[in-house]
Amino acid sequence: MIGTLKAEEASQLQLVEREDIDDEEDLFEAIDKLITAGINAGDVKKLQDAGIYTCNGLMMHTKKNLTGIKGLSEAKVDKICEAAEKIVNFGYITGSDALLKRKSVIRITTGSQALDELLGGGIETSAITEAFGEFRSGKTQLAHTLCVSTQLPTNMRGGSGKVAYIDTEGTFRPDRVIPIAERFGMDPGAVLDNIVYARAYTYEHQYNLLLGLAAKMSEEPFRLLIVDSVIALFRVDFTGRGELAERQQKLAQMLSRLTKIAEEFNVAVYMTNQVIADPGGGVFISDPKKPAGGHVLAHAATIRLMFRKGKGEQRVCKITPGGIADAKD
Image 1 (spheres, helix red, strand yellow):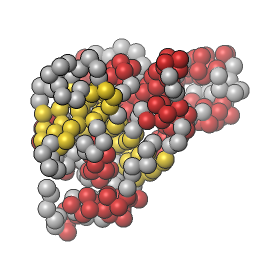
Image 2 (cartoon, one colour):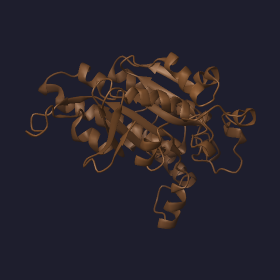
Image 3 (cartoon, rainbow, N blue to C red):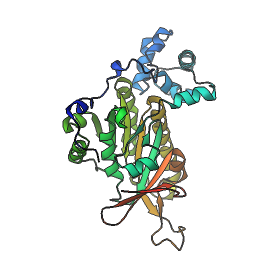
């Protein structure tokens, strides 16, 4: 636990505005640069209306998707992609360049020393961390803690950035953020102001909220995106085996969007997941359960954390599969 900070230390707990970052190379190229490359301003506006605000993000879309945008013909899309390729290098790079790029990755403290050690320093940006477990196992509590720790300066193992929170189950409680902020010696009001929150009610609404994030992240320094939970609305909106294939396809599109956001804006994505009964879990496990979402969700997550209740208020976390290491807090 971090004790009360001195006044001069507390004064450091201010978010770094994007324009103040002079020594850090831009992580993405704004879509407006296409205008200087000869692309019509009206066509650039159409891309922005479709949720594409960076050249990096543009290159993550297929030409089929881009021609689906109203007003963009195949010829226009070819010209736009050609211009974007000259601005952003999406080809081969050396291993040394890849290592240099990895240095921009930030690890955000979870507030638990044991869990930080398990994760190699904390929740990683440019990656998806999935937490699954039964109700009241600590998944959402960790989400609330990350809302605060992400806003700490990087020299205090934070992310110096804002937080986006998409809530699909109505579990976000701003009053829970206040004592966590006080624990870290931060101003609760300022912390809450730096969290953008949205409640999603359908899987389509959830996806549209992700599309709308590009505009915010291209203008302000975000470091964390929370989706709590990623699977809940899919389990409600799709029922029975007859709709399972469509559900998994839509889920894959949602997860692909999360991956692109993580890499495009160098943000950490923390998503919670529910569990389902696992009849083939083995006779030696008293109550076998597995994460919902199947292989589609499993392949999308960079790190999978399994939470379970321990003794009393203790919670146990394991990295899966294998469960080689675990943390208790």
